[in-house]
Structures are given as C-alpha cells and as structure tokens.
Image (cartoon, rainbow over all chains, first blue to last red; front, side, top):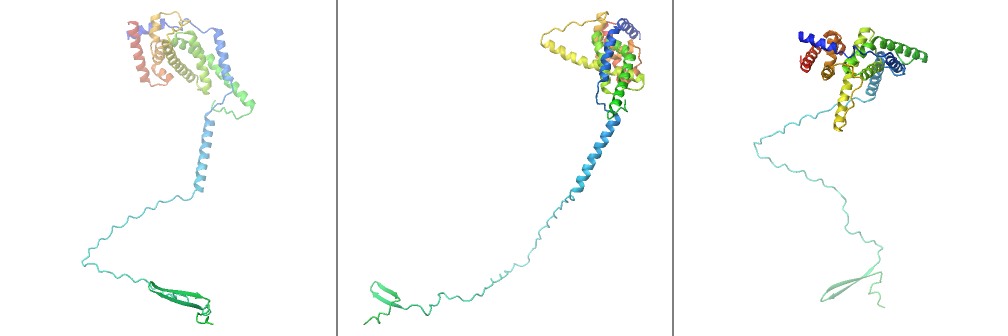
Length: 152
Length: 175
C-alpha cells in the first residue's frame, strides 16, 4: 500500500493540470466552435423515427412477399417414381415350346392383268419373220396393209 | 432529444436547434474544465488537450444523444474523450512510423507543462486506457466501479489495468 501511496503522491505532485487552466479566450473560442457545430442542421435519427422506419420497411417487405405468394401457382410436388419391381425369374421345368408365329395377313387385291388388252380399234400391223442361220428376226409394220394385199 | 423529429415546420426545427444549442452550451459550461484537465493529464500537452475537448463535444453533438442525468452526461463525455485520445494515439503511432521511415524527425512538443520529465515519460509510455484509469483513480480519486462505468468496461478489467499500470509506473520511476 505504501508503494501505491507513494505513486499517488508522485502523480499528484506532477499533475500537469494543477498549474494549467483553460484561458477565458480559449474557452470562449472552444464554446463558439461547439455551439456552431450544435446549430448546424443535420439529420437526427431519433429512436422513434428509426423504429417507425423499421416497422414500415418490414410491413412493405411482408406485403411484397404475401403478394408474390398469392400470384404464384401451387408449388410443384415432386413425384418420385416408384422403384421398378425386380424382374421375375422363372425357372422353367420344361423346355420352352416354339410358339407358332401368326401368319401375315393376306391382302386380297383384284388380279391386275400384266398387259393391258389390246384395244379392238388398234391398227393392224404386218409381221414379217426373217429366219436366218444367225437367228430369227421379227419386223412389225404398223398401219401398213398386209403384205399379201399389196399384191396388185 | 429522443422526441426530436425533423419532419416539422421550419419554426419547430428552429426552436429544436435552439434547444440543442442551449443544451450543449450548458454541457460545455459544466464539464469543459474537468474534460480539459483530464485531456491534459492524458496527453501532457495543452494543444492536444484543447483539441480533445473540442472534438469531444463535437462528437457528442454528432451522436445526437445526451443522457438526461448530469452524472451520466459526465461519464459519457469522459468515455468519448478517452476514446478520442486512443484514436489520436493510434494515428500518432502511424505518423511516427511514417516519419521514421522517411527519416524525418518529429517536431518537439509545445506547451509542455513544467513537470518532471521522468514522470511524464513514464505516464505517456502507458497505453491510453491504463493511463486514463491511473489518472482517474490516483489523481482524480474516482473509485474503480465508477471508472468502469465511465469507460464502459468491467470493474475487474479496470482493476487489472490499474494494477498493471501501477507496476509499470513503479518500474519506470524506480519505486
């Protein structure tokens, strides 16, 4: 304790404020500066004002959220596919029998003549048959009178 | 102060400003002497003490909130002043570091109160919070609980700071 008392005595003896006081001129100057700062217009965020702003913001956010929820369709429900059943394994006691495949259906169509019938009014043609050792050649002369009739 | 809303007519705003000016004028009249003495004990420099007191009131005005009770107002102002002193100390440390790097010698301090240089050097070597606790307790005679309330710290913390500061000062002063 004596050490503390000594220390206290030393500090009080060396107190810089004991012999120095603020001069009246300095005090007036400082006070003028303080009052000038106090008279400056500024925005004061008092507690009720901050509370009102916070409540207003919260209400606006809530209204936006509720409005969006009302407009949105019902949320999609995820349908999970049922797990596919395990494939049945059948143990055949007998060898599988061949199943006869069904016969393809026969489409009944009218028989179509391979060559169209020669019209009745077709022009007569003369057929000349040349026979030679190299082979036979047939010549048709359409529209010409039969060779036998040209004999005059 | 809490009922002061700015969404009023110009006359209401003017009267509100007048009230604020009067309120801070009264605060200055009541507390400037103590704050100046505290600033001088913390900085040992009259210029710095003056700047601290003025900045303290400006900071108080900017906060826009003044405790209603006079004792609470004094504690609040003391806390602002100590915090300002800590800010200045940090800035001066940075400035000194820059000056050291640039090999610029700092100018000697002016208006140094005429006290022993060993006490001054020992006190200024303490961190600002410890310095404030030593000054408030040993010179101004405040209790630890009161100092803790002023600085916004726990009483145990204030006591520990005081103990550390005393030990440092004893070592520096050879006691």
